[in-house]
Length: 346
Image (cartoon, rainbow, N blue to C red):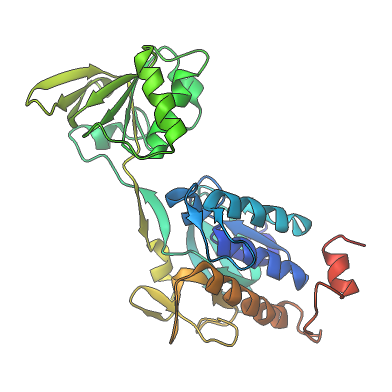
């Protein structure tokens, strides 16, 4: 171990609903943790794919949106104050001779933990790249896949590509930015957008009052000189080829899950999923557990509520490793003074 390693009881890979509930269940076992996620925000698939769509099968909650579920889970884990490390992937995992697990991230962080829980869902979500001439060499300078700091686009011509809510939201935010971009154009192949009605109305209003330009068509090339973007070449539905001024392109073309480095961690897998037992959802490597959509076992169902069950049993399995001299008891949050202490109620 290097001196720079962060020593902790547990590391959770994945900050989706199951990863968040895992942090809560570990907290009830007096296990503190760090949580790592490839996305720049908490919530995983819920926040990326259906933040405002209804979920009906969470026990005790007749209906909630993905956003509401994530918010409630974040409130629930506050007593245990897990540390989040976002916008980075776990690049390397190795079990050491001293029974600790070494975890290294793409951002250069290094952890030494007693247990690792993989709650990575269907994999790390990555933005679908813009596949047109000139895009690859401009990525990170003039081509972006997240809004980030909108102030950097002041006095610039910005083209926002995409037909989903993320594109509409980004375009509207840019129109409200101070200092403002020189121009903001929302581009999509069809004049059909998927977003909440209020957002769509706000977008149409911004177009009507001239704050936002709407371009229907397909990008065919990014035109640049000496790595400086100056225009987007567009094929219109009428068969014309035009150029839209642009110094920056924000592409919201959807997200695709990729298993990523998990496949290289030496864990038993079937069909790109981690094989676990159903006693405590441990993998074949001691100290490493897998919960949620990333795992597989006979009868597996990919439901959030099933992931919550898996996280509960995984926490009991983790407790046996983190606190080997303690007897792991089943306690009830209703009556246990020890759990009340951990929850900060007494």
